[in-house]
Length: 109
Image (cartoon, rainbow, N blue to C red; front, side, top):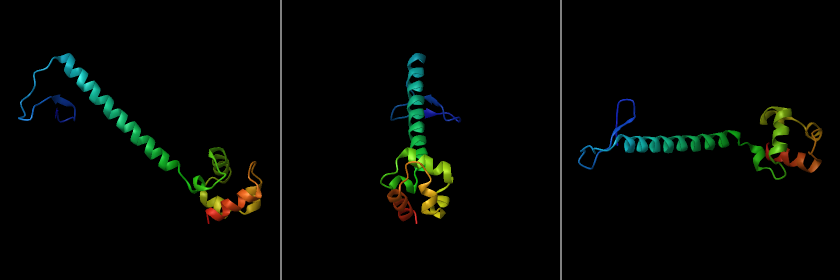
């Protein structure tokens, strides 16, 4: 594939750089296929980045699922605030018992 100055496919060439003479419909099909592959790759990488961004130290604590993680972050806003909270602050949240509060404090020192 040969690209133009706007990075769009301009033509198809062989190994000797000789342009293939193909129908407009086939060229359009190839271009649409190329665009779809490109969009799929971009979306996949966005999801990977989004997942990395949402990952936190809370994910590694047994007993903390998505709902408790969201509850903790909604209440304390940041991991640093959770780190600074005392056990009694954690115990005020629904679903956080003494054992889990101790695990949280131990894991995010």
